Amino acid sequence: MTMDKRFKTVSLDTMIDKHVGKKGTPARDAFEHELRIELLGQAIRQVRLERKLTQEQLGELVGVQKAQISKLENSVKNARFETIMRVFDALGATVNFHVELKKKKYAY
Image (cartoon, rainbow, N blue to C red):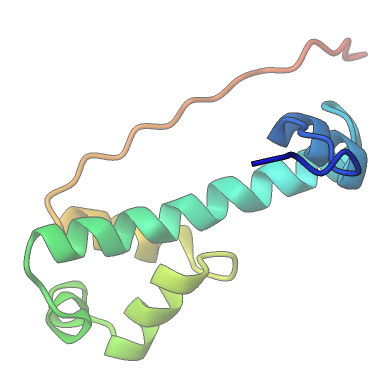
């Protein structure tokens, strides 16, 4: 089998740098933030399925409608933090946050 010489293999990081922006740029920061938010919704779905709960059952535990659980699993961008925490609490999941401070000088 011969390789087509017109195609070059590049890393995912190289493609993201080219099409989104280099690390530290506003566009790249926004992209990575969106990716983390999406992973949160996927985590809710994964834990719910591991607990063998339907969206409706989880909604009942949290006190919200099934539609809201569906929205959380698909995008938590517009969700209230309190609701997200109640969902993880109902799932018996512990949530840990990692806060990383950027090196900036602040004038007081």
